[in-house]
Length: 487
Image (cartoon, rainbow, N blue to C red; front, side, top):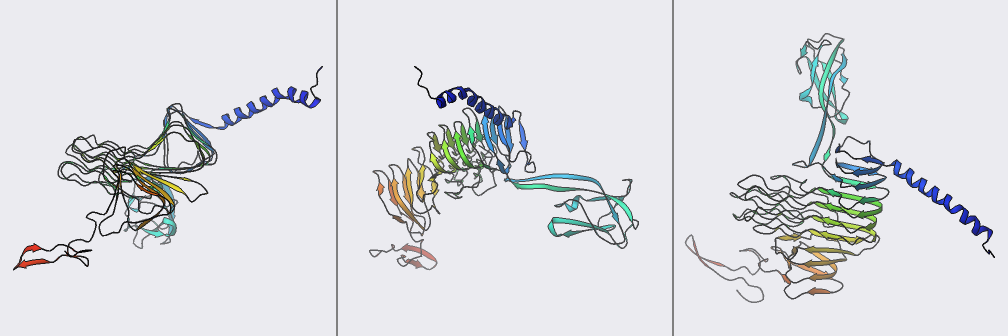
């Protein structure tokens, strides 16, 4: 006897219909996505893709600036990147040809475009055969909103009331290279696909972290970690940028005898309302120093914020290798990851590159949204290298300095816990106290070091400065410095 209720029988008969409706909605959603499957550059001035659901498949898409998408998927071996510009600044120009303007007496007319290069302005008669001279026949004057006006001079050879043709170059858009993408839905980076800005940062001689070769080999570029020193003493680049909101590119390695050093890594910022699934790779590594004796580039910046973080891929902002054995290694980059829910099981690394002296570790900041607790990890894969600045680290942070890393800061740190692992160091900087307040546990493992050696007052300074004995103009001896005991 069939005891199935009328409602259950209705549900059974409707199940295929519900499946068909769901499948139809899925196809409609897939059909609404814009698929890019050929190499494409989306310039700063191109807003045609904004607000759309974008799929990048089996090609390289280059874009810059702030973007807003409904969804984003990188699949089928595709790559999303940004422009590689030596100084990080992008300017897109265009040309207006033969813009007609009527010039009456000395009354000014406003040219149609803004941000015009004044030196590029050419004025001719209507036939284009007679060219007029700027400042002699016509005058250009700046107006608000980056506009230019044009008028006849009192002694102009342009006939009063004549129509002239004006040709000029102007700036369509300008900004900095980098990915700054906000997505209202989900972002998926499939296996074998990448968001990759490796080597797309600063070029040698440009940016806070770059260095110069002295005399024939280059130090490593700096960013999160300082760059390594070259075999001839060329200093590595400095450590800079925010620990928890990184927005800058990596510095380049210094030049060697064979040419420029490796470029720094670029910058990635992804703000995702839904799920950020990283099953592929998000990479902002510095480039290796491939020219003889050149330094490696520093890792760039990766700032991710997601409702849900998922996947088992890789997030990497490593420094590039210095050209063996003379070039310095590039410092690691800066990574910050925020999420409401975390299911991500892949790797996150920001290590210094190898070289004559290895680059310093980068920093990895993670935080659950809606909480005040965060974790900062500084680790260098077991390789002792240069230092990492943690200045500006937020309060209530769990700090872990591990595996060859050497961290320093100015001012003070307020931490919820501190772990300095074996083969790792916390340093005081010159003339600065090492002031750390820890509300929870502080652990210095065997082989770990918390040190202020040599970081006190400079010679001749401070209450306990030792004196010197002069014989004429010759300094012959000096007394020891004092503190707890006399010098």
